[in-house]
Image (cartoon, rainbow, N blue to C red; front, side, top):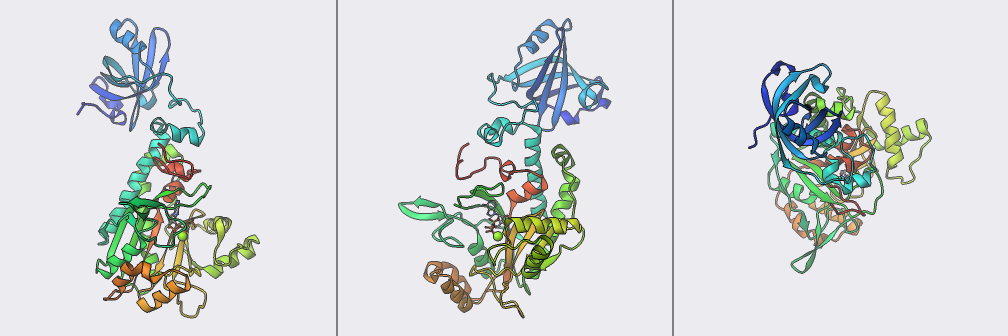
Length: 436
Ligand code: ATP
Ligand code: MG
C-alpha cells in the first residue's frame, strides 16, 4: 500500500512532524510567489503551501499541477489558525501519481450546482464532491447498522435468486431476460422465496438484495433497479409481531447512524431525529378519516392513500413528534397476504410504514393455508399452475409467518434529506438511463 495519512487524521498536535498525504488536487490558489494546493481525500481536505524560493523545482512542479490530478505529497505539519482545519502542510516532496485531463467535464471544487442529469452522466467525477460521498458513506453505515440489529436478533442473512419464471405480483412490472433461449424475468421481490424458506424452517431471515420494477414512472421516489431490505419471520401471532421487528430495527438503525455518521449528517446539513416513542399504528380507515377531516383530501382509489395522502399524513404525525408510523389493514389484493382481520370485512393483515411522508416498506402476515391461498390466487386471475414451485412449499408443513420489504434507496433519500432518490444510488437506473 502507498503510505499515507487521511487528512482528518492530521492535527495541530502533530506540528513539526512529517506526514504523507495522497488524493486528488481539489483546488489551486496561485498568489504569485505563493501557491495553495488543496488536496482532497475521502475523509477531507488538506492545504499544502508551496513558496517560491524554498525549493525551485518543487515550486515549479506545483505550478504544473492541474485540478483533479492524483498526487502524493510529503511535508511537515504546521499548526495554523488561518488554514482550514487548523493545519497545513509545508511540502518537501510532490509526486504526480496520475494526471487528470483538462478541462474537466464538470466542476468538483466550485459550488456550481449541476443539474442531476449532468451529475449522473459524469458520476465518477460527481461522486468526488464531499456531499455526494457523504451520502454513500451514510448509506454504508446505515445498512451495516440494520444488518447488525438482525444479526443480533438471530436472523440469518440469505440470498435469493434474481432470475425466475414468474414474478411475485404479476407480469406487468417485470423485465424479461433471455435465459438460454427462453424468456425468464428479473426478480421484482424475493417474496415467494422468503416464504419458501419459512417452510424450510429457517425461522428468521433477512436479505439485502436487489429488485427490478419495469414501471414507466417519472417521480422523485422511483427507480427501475432498487435495493431492498427484506425480512421474514415465523411463528408470529399476527402482523403486529412483524411491525415490532420493523420498528425496533429502524429505531436501532437511526440511533446508530445518528451516533456513527455525525460527519456525514453534518456535511448533508441533516439534523436526524430518532423516534423514541412507539410508532403510531393507525388503521387504513382511520388514516382516510384523518385525510378527509384534517385536510379535506379523499384519495380517488378507495383501496389506497395516494402520494399526496401519504405526504399529508406524514405532516400530521410529524407535528405530533412521529416521523414514522404504520398504516395497518390495507384492503390489499395480493394473494400472499392474510386477508381476515377479526371484526373487519375489508382489511387485510397488510401494513405500510410511512417515514417522513413517504412509503418506506410494505409488509404483513402471510396466508399460510394452501387452500385459502389458492382461492385468493384464482380470485385475482393468478394461475396456481404457474406458482406450483411456491405452493408446493405449503403442502408439507409451514408455520404462520410474515415479513416486509423496505426500500433502502428510499430510506437513504429520507435520512439524507435528498430531493431525488437517484442521489441515494451510485449508478441509478430509470426508464431513460442504463449508463453509466
Ligand atoms: P410505491 O407504491 O411507492 O410505488 P410499492 O407499494 O409498489 O411502492 P412495494 O412492492 O411495496 O412497493 O415494495 C416495497 C418497498 O420497496 C416500497 O415500500 C419502497 O420503499 C420500495 N420500492 C418499491 N418500488 C420502488 C421503486 N420503483 N423505486 C424505489 N423504491 C421502490
Ligand atoms: Mg407497497
